[in-house]
Every structure is written in structure tokens, then in C-alpha cells.
Image 1 (cartoon, rainbow, N blue to C red):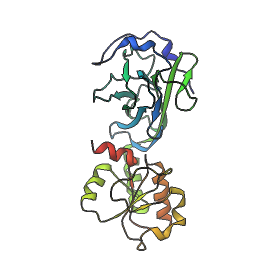
Image 2 (image 1 turned 45 degrees about the vertical axis):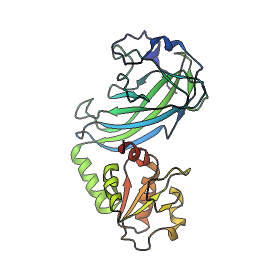
Image 3 (image 1 turned 135 degrees about the horizontal axis):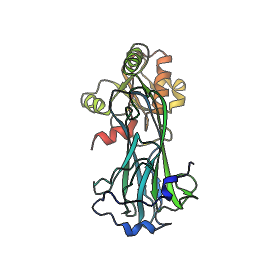
Image 4 (image 1 turned 135 degrees about the vertical axis):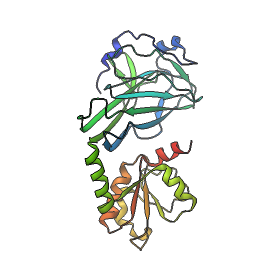
Length: 285
């Protein structure tokens, strides 16, 4: 894991959040951070002129002691992160270390409480010619006990950090539109969480959850098939290959693979839920 170079700097308070208690920043080995989903997300194609894109990661304190949130750091100035606290408040916005004063922040998450980290990427931050593949990380700093998996002790900073990884491919607007048009003609199509909400009210499609391990399903799900076993479970799928099929997983990556497999099998009306079940649940709030 990359070291958090900026954590060795003295942080200067430039904003505060109601309920933030800076005396908690010295607390360590308290609480246990537990992700409630994948810590990796692929935005896939990003329109450089399409505005910012975001992703929410959900966590809980899976211990009988308070978990202290101490802030976050991103690996690039184009990416920011805020923490949505259990009471609905938002933390200050955290960015790249070394890019000026970072907000001072500390907040206690009680045992069993949940919180979210909202990551925002601005494709235009580096200018209109900054196209191509991107990879970004966000490091959440907490008092969590280290476990070497999703809570790692950083030797240089002396803090425990949890890394969220994101990637995508920034395209010129014309190339992005051309690619989307091509996918609509020859491959599966995207469906947004908001569109799925509307369609479920008068459901006229086949809904498939392909995530492994099995998760809590979206209402009215018709079949549960592992994304890598689609070809072995044709008996669970509609016989009519013109049937509209909506495929989802937790975050969108497994369902993309399953959707393409359905196209390869001859299904002609396949939709992949953008952002997966996580994005759908967020859209209901």
C-alpha cells in the first residue's frame, strides 16, 4: 500500500463539523472498521464533459468500542472524499495531501453504527485534454485495530488506514457518445438506479442477481445466478431471447461480465444496472 506522505505534516484546522472532537485524534486500537461492500469500483467510461462522477462506500463499526474517524486523503487533486456520519451530517471535504491545509476532524462511531465515504472525481480537473485510463485511491484514517486486510497500519504516519480504489477511462465527449451508441446497437445497455425504480412499479422484465457471494436481493428479483455460471443455468432464464433482462450485482462489475455473456448467448435486450445494488439502495434514500 502506498504510504501516506502527507500524514506526517502538521494538519491545520480550516473547517469543522458539529460533533467533531479533536481530542479523539490520539485514540488508537479502538473499534474495528468493517466494509459493507467491495473496496474497489470501476466507473468504466467517463465523459470528460459529463461532470463529476461519484461512488459511495459503506462501512460499520464491528466492535464493542468506539471507532474514531480521523479524516481521509486522496491520491490526486481531482478526487475528494467526504464522510456521511450516522446522524446524517457530512464531514469536511478531504483532498490530496500536500495541496494546502487539510481539515481537522475526529468523530466517534459507536459500536454497530454505519457510515459512508462519498468519493467524487472531476474528469475536467486536469484540463480538457486529460483523457485516458485513471486510477485513484482514497485512504480513510481511523482508530481501528489493524487486520492486514482492509485496515492496515502505515509505518510512516503511525496511523491505521483503509484504502478504497477506483478506476475508469476518461474519454472525449464525442468518443464517449460514439461508444455508448455502439453498445446500444451491439451489446448490453446501461440502466440507472432511478430508471429501475420506475420500471419496477410496472415490471415487465426479467431481473437477475449475479453477485457472489449471495447478497440481499432487490425486490422482485426473478433469478439468482452466479455471474460466472450464466451459461450453465440457461434453464433459469427466459426462453425468448427478445425478453428484456436486467442484470445486477453489488457494484456493477460482475453484472457487466454476466450481461456480456447473455449477449454472447444471443439475448438481444440486456440491461446492466449501473452501480449495482449499492447504487440502487442509495437511490432510495
